Length: 478
Image (cartoon, rainbow, N blue to C red; front, top):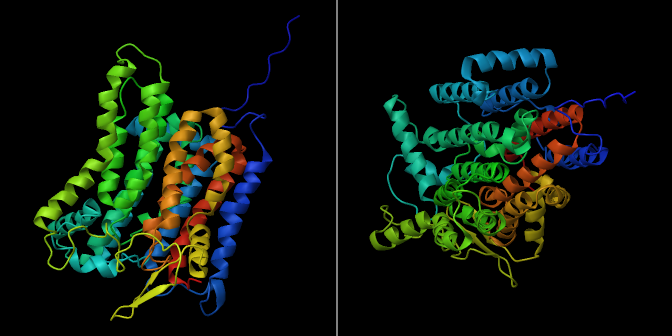
């Protein structure tokens, strides 16, 4: 008599060998408890943490509603209701757009309403710098595409009869967020499997850097969006192993660096991808041998730098197009004309006529230590878990681990030695890119090792934490 068949596990939960309490409780402590405690410790508003939102925050309340409603829709509905909803959406849009239509419509509708009512408010960012120039065409060579996005947004809004510089510097942030979330929804099924792709996309989008897609007025949101899209495209490329060179992935990181020069420190991921394509994959039908791939690899290695280098050369010869602005933008440093922190010596301060204080930080000085600590706790404490995630992923797929770690290490090194003239609170925008590869690592690790119900709880809480993060810039910074 034959033995009874073994029970088949649910397709949307990891095996018992993979499931473990440890990743869940570590994630709860580092991604939920640590930032929650940190946010509460920084609340200094009259009446405590439940003080009503000030007049400038109605848009934030709308973001909270959309964010938390989306979390419950993706993560928490009963299986039967969710299956019926997915089947209905599939019949209407086709399986490739599963789960993407609702967040796209919600984000677009919310953005249009906020633009129409001129209620787009949020974190300060560096709006004071860019808002006056949103309606002017010029080239800021260290972040040209990010600067041009403001001008394109101003022209787009003007077509609809809205002439607002402030809205023009905030609208690209929404568009970059929609693009990143949509790509995450489309690529996650290949990266981690279809069962948890929607919740994984939400976890990746919300946990690290969602604040930069809620109307953040700066040149950096499209750099964040394009770096995130590049990482997702690279993970999909390594999952599918197509019979092609990574041209698309090179173009994406090149556009990210063109948006903001800080993305150049994320190009280690593209270098890893090129080396994997060149040396690790055996020859396949239609794939040239290693010797014949070398010229292609050389061209691929140039793409991430060619747009930015070409813009710098153009501005060096013809100028930025705006009198008084340097041809190199901020590529040669800010107010101190020094990009990096000082290795030793005294702290230097510069007091601008408008009262702004700029600081030249010293490595391992008190202000530097406090700034780095706050940067990690405020932006993404999950980076502390990346060694565990990297060890797990290196055992499962060393190519993906090398791809993400190459980007993470470059961006972490940049954050540790870049001098934030405006201080770590304001310059978080130029230092926080490390959260994207760290978020990718944690998304792949936790979605494959945490039991289904706990995974849903973790995604919901991390999404709520992302909204809390948008309120923190209104509070005092230690």
